[in-house]
Image (tube, rainbow, N blue to C red):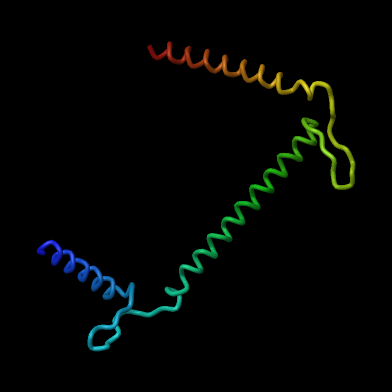
Length: 127
């Protein structure tokens, strides 16, 4: 019972502190308004949600623009082939593009072996 009473007193103290700081508004038992009632405080969650949605759409637009830029860069470098909206073919198709996954795997294996060697050398230098 003492713990419950202490919790109630603490809760009441925190509420009074917020009212006096004019963070919230309250009406006491005599009908007197304490604190400030603000329209923005009522509308704030909706505004925050709207701003969050705007930010998310900007991020999506930026990612889409970056992906398009990277794709165009790869097409111009003739790394991939593409057909534009006018039906014009861009890039180069070759037999090597069919064997490309095997070549990429081989290059990846070489790179990983090189990293392992570098890590071992760095570790040996620390000893």
